[in-house]
Image (cartoon, rainbow, N blue to C red; front, side, top):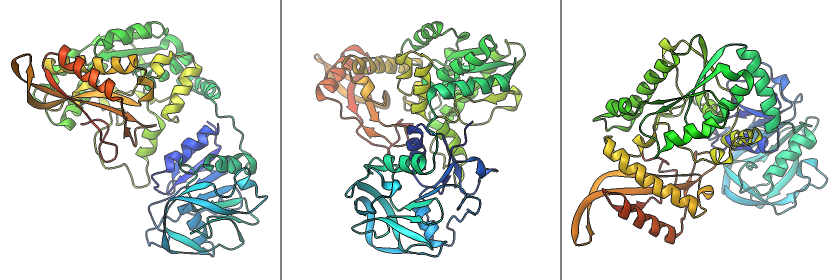
Length: 509
């Protein structure tokens, strides 16, 4: 793998955004916690210090040894990174007298500085700090200011070291991507060679070397990640890849058959296994969301292991793990508090005795789609909304029954089909329906009904970490509601979820 840009994470909520912006410049980068530095930093062509929720003045402030970087590798400090370089470099950082959070404008930029080439005074930037740099570090020269922040950007003379107190990675910073490009390309000289085609070539070569003539078994879900991982593995080892697609009885309407048909045209070696009854039996009477996930995970492993044992001499398990999963597993403060289990993350049971191969572990979701497109994977598959591993089980609040699954499959089919026919599907990041554990009174004709309520959910997002509800047209919602109530027996009320994440999660369970 390339070693172009190292991002040291000090715990900022924006660190992944820095990486995404760098990758958008066709430059490879990696995120490492500040307290787990790579063994050989000299491999990297540039280093970026992230922001942080900490204050550099606090006793527990992150304080890494940068002696292998300073003056040797081009360095950019962002927000906390800029204050860190000042505080521990002869300058001073103090609590700010004015609020330095939100939009600001660069009122002054030093002329002729490559770091700000193509950036005009007045450009909008995003501030997010309570401390401010009162005095620059030794040998530093101010490059930019805002109305409230005197030292918004500076450079340390005699080094290729730059620092900014704003966040170039967020979209509120109008020229943020340009500033990152100036630093990485014009100043650090990093080549823009991180492209989907190059990734495919490098990964296939690496997989051939790693796997040799070994057999790999991979669980297909019908989604983007597992499908792209399968095609990459197939390119490397051909028929030695054995794919298993399990129907857990909790998929969307007719999805098992449709996905198998789609895979037939991809030249993959796929076995379809209908284990619906086994999963529904394991879920009988289970209401707690975490227990549902555990029951589904346990049953899936049992089914998958049964099928894998039918293939002789399998040595590897292929997984569609992507980079956000990897980053979060080695976060600055350890793994995040468990809000809900993630179906792609976790160790294998000891009895499986398989080594793991993860061809997508260094890609973000949008990069996975671009890699898939470069390999000619169907646009309809690549454009599919994310779908939870536990399927409809976590969209049915309460216990699971075959009848509840039927109801929700019908509702979901009407909703998703409607989004597609109205040209709204590709404008939504994820959409689905939730079956609520309440009945409500309704009237159909002259008859009183006492039936289920369903909630529709549609959100906009880039990676699922944050999400806003989508303002779907009233005409669409009205027609969808009418179609659901008229066509799905057992439902007499439809509501629309207008909660954003945070505080609400995308899925209800």
